[in-house]
Length: 311
Length: 251
Image (cartoon, rainbow over all chains, first blue to last red; front, side, top):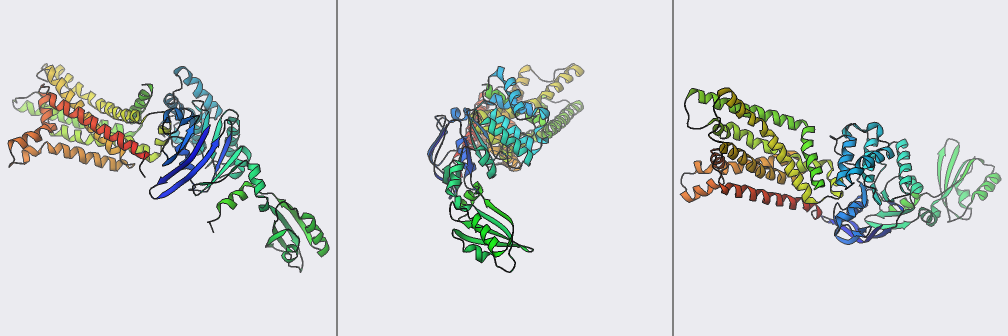
């Protein structure tokens, strides 16, 4: 559906993205992760035909985004970051206008506009001025607009930014449902969202692709970032000293909370040291009130890949 | 064609969504009304050798309103879209750059023409009340309104170009105001410069909006200004198109 080859974009004096190569297949939900300024929006804008790349190629449904821009654009629904909209138009009016721009046939405009309003929950506000809508509703108008012409591909730039937790959940559900018929490329900062919705993830950092895999595989690579959390009353013992002696424990950090000490352990890949900890606590007569395995999350993957230069 | 019409109708309607349109309309009605009133009352006092219609289109009031109105109409065309970021959804829809440029140009032109509709009424009322013709002939009406259209096209295209250069509406307004005023004063140069040859004076006269309006409002349809303004409009629109596309390679 999307094919990107050696895509590079240089702005005055600086390189926004460098030699990107990736493909997104039909029906995939691809998550696009990266810190601010990593080049996510630039990549999406190039794919959406808003600006050309400095070098390299990109195509959507077989159409080059620059050479055959019009056909490529006809195949995609794009929702830009922060969803710029004409605030002086009413919701239905805006969607009618967009439908005509996107070549929705005359006799289908009413039907399509009705459908997307239904799907995105805009029925209650259909006659309101867009300028009077809350952020969440504006976001939905943007999404409705992207869906109007039943595109094969949706490109959503931070679809859940600025929404409250309920709205985020709704949008996530919506995206998941859309994923059944559409190919989706979405960028976000919210990592649990990616774990829940995406079939594959690209992590981009400083304009380069640092990882591209399924969320499960990425987590597999980074198992060592998981660890064990121990909360115990150790009496006169230091605690950390003793724990460090257990085979497989790489390092221990201690937080003190009154009488209680909270130890965070980093352990060797794939090891579970909870049993040893329990025996140690029993032997040293520590009072134990938490002993849990912390699973690696995409957050760990993300941090490990992108933190290199941030002190 | 459907896309162009869709874009055009949004451009025209968007004028009436904002208070600016009504301000401009009121301002224009007041100034042209005052203009008409003064011309008629002046003629009441002494006999003159020209018609009401000629006087109306060649007065100081007329030119004052005329020069001011273009920056107001055109400043928001592109600048507002750049500022709000709405250019992004617009240009990622399957529309061509020239469709957008032409839609914006004609949208502004249509609004400009709407401004002139009430003036037709002035002449009609004048004839009803005084039982005298307001102009020497139908050709004089035709000539003046044709000149309005030609000058309007050219000055709107200048405004389009100014607006595509910046995301700040005020800057766009200042650029187009300066450009239009300078062009206008170029036409006055022949009255100011005394030590120039007749050829230079003629040359400057060719660019004088005042002179063109004078000729056309007498009902004389000269093809030279028609060619000048139509071709200059095309040049300005081509420049606008180029500048609009430059977002693709600039920065």
